[in-house]
Amino acid sequence: MDIEELLKENKYEEALALLENDNSLNSKLFKASILLNLGRNDEVISLLNGINTIESCVLISRAYSNLKQISKAIETLEKCTQRFPYSHSIYSELGKLYESQSDYETALRYINKALEIIPISSDYKFLKAKILYFQGNYEDSSFLLGEILRLNPKNLEARIIRASCYYNLGLRMDALAEINRALDQDNNNSLLHSLKGMIYYETGFYKLALAEYKITIRNGGNSEDLYMAALCSYLLNYYNDALVYIDNALTKKTEPKYYALKARIQKALGKLDEAKNLAKEVIAMDKSLTEIVRDLL
Image 1 (cartoon, one colour):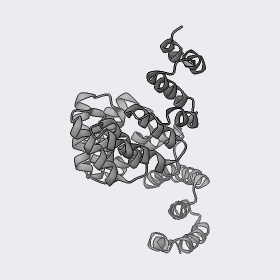
Image 2: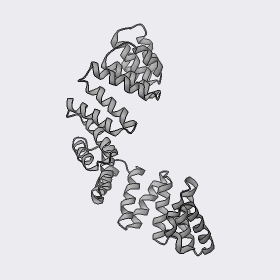
Image 3: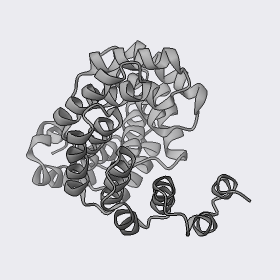
Image 4: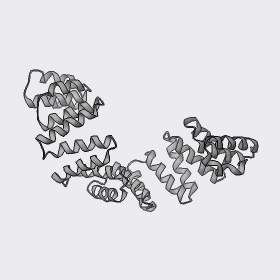
């Protein structure tokens, strides 16, 4: 069995054994790649020490990154740009690293350098679109994502981010169209159902919103999904259901606004003393919620 067949079957140790006596550059790079997959990051750094190629820089940087030594990962790549100033892959790796550290301005600078060298790269355009999204530049991000989706309509992540761009731009119907296209690919995606639920809620379609939040909850939804299900149920006068949802939300997270909604639900159920006492607790927790519960006092 050759190395490629071993790797296809995830037989990494056997692949390493075949390369043991081969000290050529290609062999070392191949070994390092396998070691990286095995999480043996220190061995990657040791094996490639003193080797100055684009591939070795990338592998060493990824090893440092896996070890949470981000500054060393960045330093390795930035030194490499001095030796290989036209290496788009180095700039792209730097873009990813800075993006992972939420330094979007620097990340964008490096990904733009990569795109100057390979302007047609969909991968680099996608990374740029994500960075623009995180910067809050939803218009430019959605435009780039449109280009990416024309080339690859099955890019689910791109479609999800574009839907979120449209939502943040206030283009709810465009967001809804993207969400529905994405759901055709992955109908169990909780993030999509949650965003769809929010759009329905904000446009007053509470039954439709509740249906979406029920899906997210079945898929293991978070406390905010439960809160929104409780809120929609309350607005639909489904008070008993609302109480169940808000109690479940509070088992996951104790947010003052959750207690405020619970107080309103208690009042709707005729539990006036409980509602009044809880309203007092809400104000003690967060005075900004006073107006929401004032009428319960």
